[in-house]
Image (cartoon, rainbow, N blue to C red; front, top):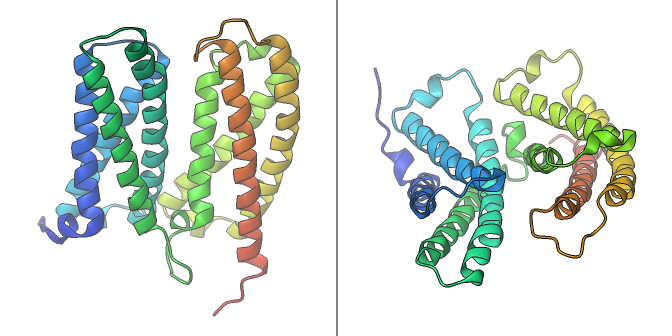
Length: 291
């Protein structure tokens, strides 16, 4: 029998999720009313808003009907990981739509859709704030017993996987297969992404207890290998890619050189994330004494 739990809608996290559903719905409705622009970046923005709207609504329904407790997954890990993912997705969509579409359209000429574009950007940034606050509320506090994805290393795993997705979107538009060095870089992005994704899936599926080796030690090894591989990419990628795509005299936001810059920045960003992840994991395993 289904039991309705009204408290899930009145607690701070529930209120944040309700507002996020409303704001994402308003955002993609405004963008859709402007008209289909097309292109991978426009599609990414619409997908981000629709995806976050749908999953947040499902979470609200499952918690309200108490069905979430009957699912064979770690619900707290799932909701925390999704809140982190939604924060990153909506932030990226907000920045992309503001820079590529709103600023370009409203800057070129006076148009009747500028008001809708600006309103969509405002609601999108407000949605980002809502999801970021949810991450802060659901993140594990020091000394608190919780799932792995509620901790700082767990949230970093979501961040690392998301940054890799952004890299894949951009690198797919470049001719990286022309040079072996660039192929190595894409291989590193892929390997590290797969490892992060597997850790997230194993955690949500409550399968870590069946892992044949100590998970914390394996996590450290994976992080160290990821740092070493990303260091090679941080050197090789900019060396080859800017030879292949030198800066042109005129380069819009989505030209090949701009995409190369984005991938380079994201590479260094992910390298820092993996370094922080490694240091934090070392501290938890070797320098934290059990209470």
